[in-house]
Image (cartoon, rainbow, N blue to C red; front, side, top):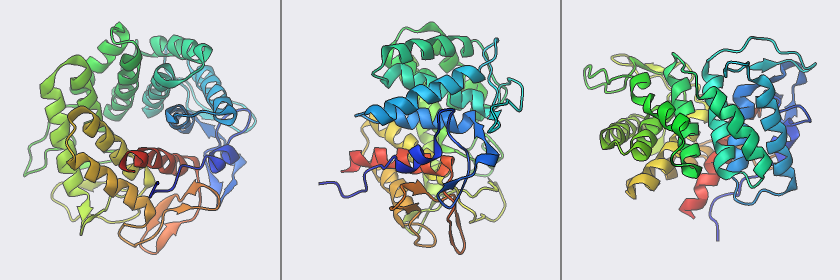
Amino acid sequence: MSVHPEPSFAHLLRLSDDVGLLEHARGATPRRQHGYCVDDVARGLVVVCREPDQGPELLRLSECYLAFIADAQGPDGDFRNRLTYDRRWADEPSLGDWWGRAMWGLGTVIARSPLPWLRDEAMTCFELGAQRRSDWPRAMAFAALGAAEVLRACPGHIGARRLLGHTSTAIGPSTLNGGWPWPEPHLGYANAAMAEALIVAGHHLERPAATSRGLRLLTWLLEHETFNGHLSVTPVGGAMSGRPRPWFDQQPIEAAAMADACETAFTVTGDPRWREGLRLAVGWFLGDNDTKTVMHDAATGGGYDGLTPDGPNLNQGAESTIALLTTLQHARRLD
């Protein structure tokens, strides 16, 4: 019997239409005026394709989300990010974080979708995108997670291996500054994805030094973000070496990135301490956090947008809802 809530896709369906996934909500009501973004559609594609039993509603979402990402891709393999509600692209193709997330979504379709035509289209887009490299470490980390998914299905895929091989260089060396091993002078957002990218790069390319480095970074980050026995994630403003630690506002994406990374670390190593890290990440959503506040709405299936000193931001946007869903998917392993 499960001791954790099952993921409910009701709110993701509420935020989705025949174009894509609306970015923001006021409470549980979608805010159409803010339109769509590749960042969130790609996240949605990952979480939908990770679901082991994809019924007609989720298959429809995966088809819609993939079509959105394919339309966003430029002829050189980079991606636009923002589409207005009246279906006009608001930017030009580039290689920001949305390129990396799009590559992650495409790789997840290739590895996990039951629909062969979706896998074929995703591979076409992935191979075009895999010819590019971003100057942004997180974009490269997200793309590396997509490349690792491709290698699950096609272990010899040259483009995925080459993209994954650039991960260590893109993330950069550790600073080794006053006990601060992180490869940046500050913690930003989705921090655990940086460590996870190194873990999967080392695992798939048989480079144990990269895996070990990723595990060391994740160990440090988990210790840094654990307080009084619960997860207390880096807030939206980040955190810097040598400065007092800020506490709020905390974002669900941080807990979800920790859940992803701990699940990957456990899969690669079998070390039970990573199940404890996953338990902390799941607990953050269920009320084991700095304000002892449940971070989701059981009635709607939505995730709250942030944890403030006074409790949750009750808006239920796409990013936070997907963070909840992916974390609850991992919680099944704890059950």
